[in-house]
Image: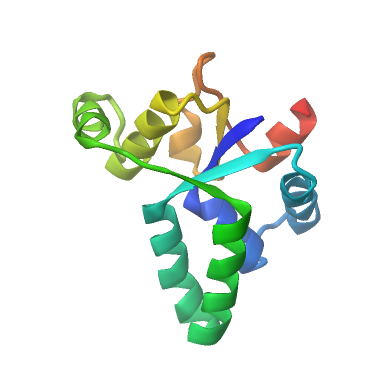
Length: 137
């Protein structure tokens, strides 16, 4: 299953800040077991690095960034996704850009804990929490 990961899910996992950390760990185990094929954008990694460095320092952040780079494949966007995002009804431009990158890259879903992003779930591209995805596997 090809899944695009929103930044908050990755940060919740590595910063252990989820109220349901055990279930989130279980979800990431599916990634490790290759039951989920994880994808991110370079901007997701950059945002993760920013917050991880604030919380854990540069050396730990480099280690985590290495783990992320090895576990996830990277999707690229273009002017098309940006323009589609601008013209969309999303109220968060970053989410909209990631949505259109995911759609155009034929992702099977987006995983996020962002309540605003979850509202944009559609049959052609479900947007679910990690726990909701676990229930579907």
